[in-house]
Image 1 (cartoon, rainbow, N blue to C red):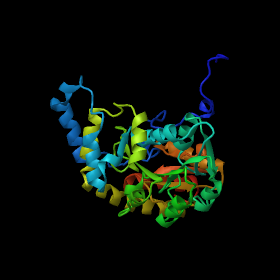
Image 2 (cartoon, rainbow, N blue to C red):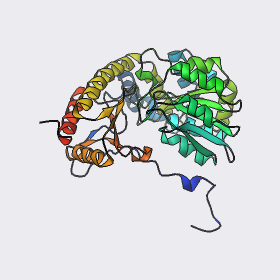
Image 3 (cartoon, one colour):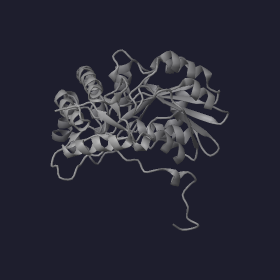
Image 4 (tube, rainbow, N blue to C red):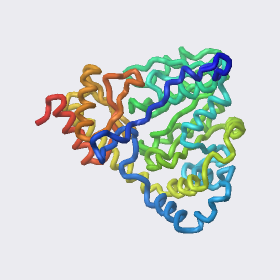
Length: 367
């Protein structure tokens, strides 16, 4: 690298993000349980919208730029969740909204705070903006509000909390989130990452708190329960003044017409969300019990995945090797400083039964 051509401070501190593996040498087909994808896939309304775009007039409009204000998609989001569409921003997954927040509200000399096992994109986006990432300890893999409040300073500009959290699957009560929002310094924005909020029936993910306070923003995604990970659509909701700021750094054509149309159809198909939630809850309960019986430690998860912890990194590696030999991919957790753990997406019941049998054999508790 040239001595005079240098990236901005912080960029070279970013470790390249590694997503869950999708391919495995020696296996033409794999059981992919590494990326927290919905095993039911996209819902029928989303698929109908896709087919309509491909076979109808959508293909004839490929030379046309998409809507810059995402009005149709924002309306679908607002109608689904009972929100003000003027306070919604859309992005390429919720990751992009997280990046907008760091770009707009944090920079050199500022701090971005998150919990010990917080989503890796918080650190990456903070460093990309030139800000300093700050980590607060967790309490038995649960977000610790007291630790976050103790770590907040006059330099703290953003505080990220995923509830439920990825990769632990744990969550804390909204009373604790409210206490955090109340106790933060006045210049800090609390960002509630609700990527997995739809997996808890009746849970608004903190939307009521966004409505009640001027220092809270929420992010959501259609990559998880909606089964649209390949489409990359997310959104955020916050005070109008904050959304106005974020739209000033958002690229005007960040979402294609296809992304907007299919996502709008998916949002209006709440039947698929309810089915996916029910299937996940049943399989997650079964898988949690099976892994515990096999000898792994597993916290109660509120998402579409579980975190299986073993007695050593060597045991985790051995279990992972056994799974790969059977054509099953899960997510190793070394990047989250948990080399003794594997994050496992909750698949269909047959998927879970196949995986649990392999793990039981690997741990010597199966036939």
